[in-house]
Image (cartoon, rainbow, N blue to C red; front, top):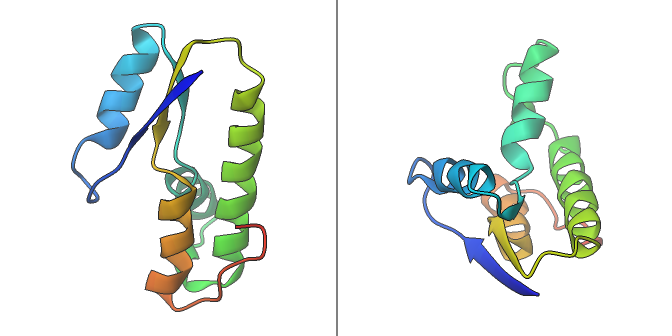
Amino acid sequence: MKRFVLTGAPGSGKTAIICQLELDGFSVVEEAATDIIALQQARSIAEPWTHPSFIDSVTDLQRRRQIRSSCQPDDIQFHDRSAICTAALPDYLGYPVPGTL
């Protein structure tokens, strides 16, 4: 399987491209942090990234998505960000890097 990782600055269009690729029938693995933020904000946590558990939640969800995607039979797969991007997040936020990374 060929895997391609889209990476770049926030707001650069990665997610929009991933959504279009999925609509075009390609296998995609979505980035986890955005979904964790949306879920926590729906639970009235305004800034979930200020909680140390945020990194664990992002890492766990991203890991589950990558494991699930590895079982798909597609020849080509697109990833919205990568484990390297996820590993940079705790450093940026000042938290320790989880052992799962």
